[in-house]
Picture 1 (tube, rainbow, N blue to C red):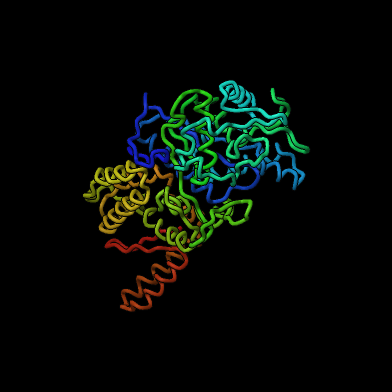
Picture 2 (cartoon, one colour):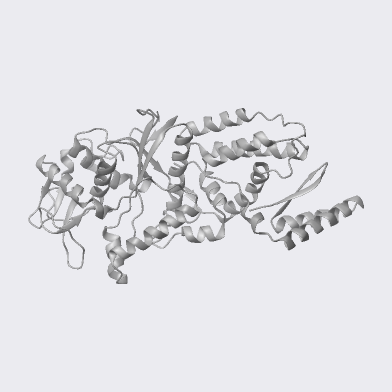
Length: 462
C-alpha cells in the first residue's frame, strides 16, 4: 500500500513493524458543534483504519479533544458557561454524531487538560536543551531558529515566513516566529501552576504531549486537515523531535482536503465564521450511507464543495447498490451467477492500495452492483457476489441497508404493490405511456421498479 506523505510530497510504501500501526488524528476544538468538514476528515481516517484492519494490521487509533485553547475560552466568556461544561457537552455531541456517521470510535480520546503534567515535563526539557526560553512575564516560547528543518512539512523557509495566522505576536519573543509553549495566566482565564508561574499550555504543545503520553516518541501515521499543516503540525514536529531526540516524530504525515460551503468558495467551512453545515443538519437530511458515499466519492486530498445536487444523486444511486447487496427472494436452486467476485475484490484493493483512492473503489462497487442486478433480473443465484459487495462496502463504512424500507408500514407496502399491479395491467393492454407514468411517479416518491421474467419487484431509493 502507498500513502502520500505530506513531508516528502510523494507516495510512499507503507512499511510498519510487527504488523501494528499507531495513528494519531487531530480532533476538534470543543467550542462549538462539529460541521461536515470535520465529518469529511473523520470519515476518511475511519476508512483508512477500516482498510488497514481489513489488510490484517493492528491499528492503535488516538484522537484528541482540545478542551483548553483561545476559542473555547472566548466562547466561555461570551456565554457564561464554564469551560469544562462546554467541553463535556460538545464531546458528548461529537461522539453521538460520529456514531451516526458510522465512524468507529478511537481507542483513546485524550483531553488536553489531562496532559498538563506531560506538557510541563516536555517544556522543562526543551528549556534545558536551549530549544525554548522563559520570559519575565511567565511565558515560554520555542526557539524556531534552533531547528534547521523548521518549515519542511509546509515547504516554507523561516526567512520568508511572516507572523500571522495563529502565530502569537509578542514583544517578549526573541524572534516573531517563536511560538508559545506556555502562556502566563490572564484575568478570567483558567490556569495551572508551573515552574514559570500560573498559566496554561499553548495550542501546539498539547498534541505533542498527548502523542508521547499514549503512543510514545514516534507515531506511524499522524493525520489531520490540510489547514493544520502550518503552523500546528509544523510546530508539533520541531518541539517533539527537540524534546525526545527521536526522528522522525511521525513516519507518515497524512492530510485531507478541506470542505467549502459551495462551489467556487475558497474558504473552508469554519464555525467561527458561521459558513458551515453542521453534522447534525446533514444527518437530519440524508442517511449515513449517502453522506459517506458523497464524502468518499472525492479523493481525500482533493478540496470538496458541499453540493445538495450531488448528495441527492448519491441518494438515488445507492438504491442500486442496496438492491444488489440484499437481493430479495433468492432461489438457491437457480443457476449460479457467473460473476467472479475475486476480480472485483482485486480491483477494489488496487484502488485502495493507491493512496486510498476511494473514488475508484466506489466505481468498482457500482460495477459489481450493476453486474449483480443484471443477474438478479435474469433469475440467477447471486448469493456469493452479493456477499462480496457487502464486504467491500463495509470497508468504506457503508451498510447498504435501506432504512426507508424498514420504516414503511404494511399499508404503504400494499399501495405500492397495487400500483405495480396496475402498471402490469396497463402494459398487458399495451398502454405503455400510461404505464410509464406510473413508474415515473413511483420513482419520484423514491420507489425503484425492477422488471424481470418472473415479475416486477421494487426497492426504496434512499
